[in-house]
Amino acid sequence: MTAASERDEGGLGREALAYADTLYNLARYLTGNVTEAEDLVQETYARALRAHAQFTPGTNLKAWLFRILRNTFLSDVRRRRNNPVVGGLDTVMPSVHDAAEQAWLREDVDLDRLRGLVAAEIEAGLMQLSEEGRTVILLDLEGLTEVEVAEIMGCAIGTVKSRLARARAALRRHLKDYAR
Amino acid sequence: MTPVPCAEARPALLDLQRGRLSAARAADIRAHVAGCADCTHAAEAEAALTDVLEHRLPQHTASLAFKRALREQWPAPAAPSRSWRRRWRVLAPAVAVVLLASVSAPLVWDRAVGRPEREAVAALTGEAVNDHLRMLFSQRPLEIESGGIHNVRPWFAGRLDFAPVVRFEGDAEFPLQGGAVGYFLDRRAAVLVYHHRRHVLSLFVFRADGLRWPRGGLEPVGRVQARAQRLRGFNVLLWRQDELGYALVSDVEPDALRALAVRLAAP
Image (cartoon, rainbow over all chains, first blue to last red):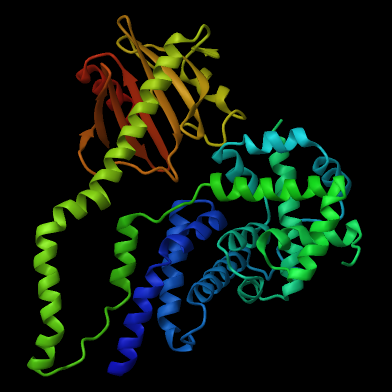
């Protein structure tokens, strides 16, 4: 490794490590536990370190790290299942609950109850979503643009839009159960 | 202004709130929402969900030890070679900063680490004492009377989003009275009540994720490292085991509280 590339690697490392908490948060919501989340973040940094030459300076480092983390997670899930994921991981069906969603949107009282939910209930509701649902909601909360989310998730911008809408609708339905 | 039907406005509500629409498109959607009760409710629902997620969804942070391990994994940048004159030009401000830091470091350390930790410990301690008092003042403090821990612990199933790990079933010195579901800060907690002579001891078990936890001033209590606190005449012991947090509080002497904590933390 040349001195110049070592310097680039070190500079990238300092910047990348600033996102450790953000990456860990997504990892916790993907894996559901501390140990696996730490393993996932550690593997993400190891891969980023190996692939640092592929990172284009001036582009979004956070989005690049998120993409590595998610791909690492999916590879791990596929390896454990010992078969490829067929038809995507999204289990949220868009049309089944449309009527219930519309009804709930019209009930003010449910919005008040929603606002009264505690942290643990919101987390439990989020954890009931599919991996794609959790990811798209968390990336959206991180303030990433739809273009960046699309790059991370390897899909079109329109797909991000529809996945986000479906995931939020599904989350509202789950939270409705806690808000009773 | 172009009229917009509900079917077109509804999917654009989140984009509107995120500021992702052009000015003209945003004005069209706003105009539609202003005149449509259903879309007004839908917009409020989107805003309420965003608000709940942004303000109450727990944000998990990596531990300091883990972050240190990550830093060690990623190599530090190699120092470029320079003449001593250039080095000194670069180093002189750094030396000044180091000297200044040596004077101000204790203050900075206190502001960055000491004070947040004190505030975190005070919040945990205050919550434990207040919850204990609520338990004492309650007309019916126990939702399940004790028939032993094997009767109490299963009672929590379906009432909490975690399984409270408590193996101590009480003994002659600390008989288990029963349990209840309560709240600890922003989350549900299992509450177990023990007696010691005529004193009441409350144990709160809750998910510890997302809570700032004391790292300093810990003392060994059986198998765990606990932080002992005293507030308004009550003694409090705080400790973590795996992903759960424990707060034991009572007006008994510290030794008696510690004796129960040792039993609770035993394998």
